[in-house]
View 1 (tube, one colour):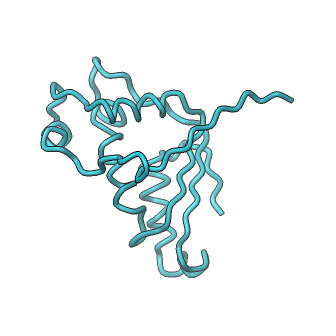
View 2 (view 1 turned 30 degrees about the vertical axis):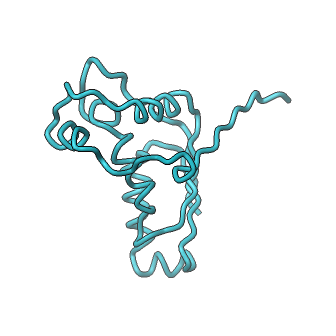
Length: 139
């Protein structure tokens, strides 16, 4: 059966993704100044999301969250008017049907659940960043 798959692999370090908010981005996001344009590198990430049926995140757990580079990706890419809020001049982020999160934690799942880290990871990464409606299998 021909599935017509198309894959794109992104390494935020390899592509030199700037994870820190610029001063303009801080003004735009922090003070809802949506007249400040979104930078081209972030618009390129929006386009990738808009063309995806599924996004896979692979990362090591860092203080019960993802590493700063990936956190910065969310900070910049999940921008006001795209991932949240409203602005009629900006196309909204589409709702993905599928997602996969693979992370190494250095501890067994049972221990992470016992100390509350597993719930924290689910709340922040899965529920907040990826959305509760996304079809994610939790292992």
